[in-house]
Image 1 (cartoon, rainbow, N blue to C red):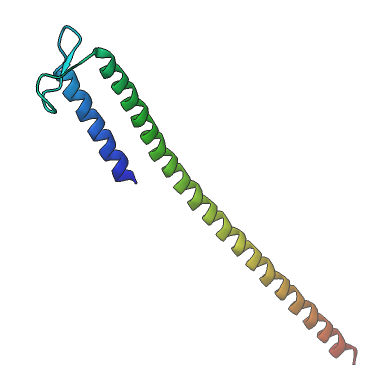
Image 2: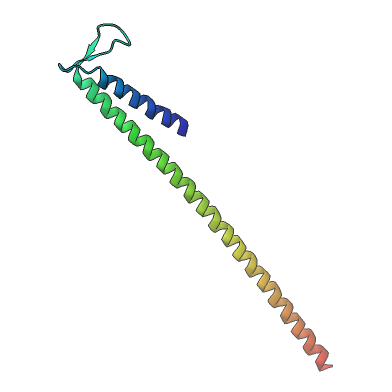
Length: 113
């Protein structure tokens, strides 16, 4: 997904550079690469620039959001591991307390006889 976004950004920048280089002073763009002698008004360049900017912004935000989501998932997994360890430690403590209590009872019975 990241490769597609980066390729889209590179293509958009290349398209804008191409249009900017061939922009005439009268406000027309000569698109001689596609067909000879075709000119486009300036509003097409402005609309294309706007759309390219929106797509670039969305892709940059998408990359940032993906990275933040990965960090959040890693943090969530780490906290779950800590909770599991804490539960495991509490269980071990309860087992040891029960053993101590049973040993104390056994000691009291042995001393009482």
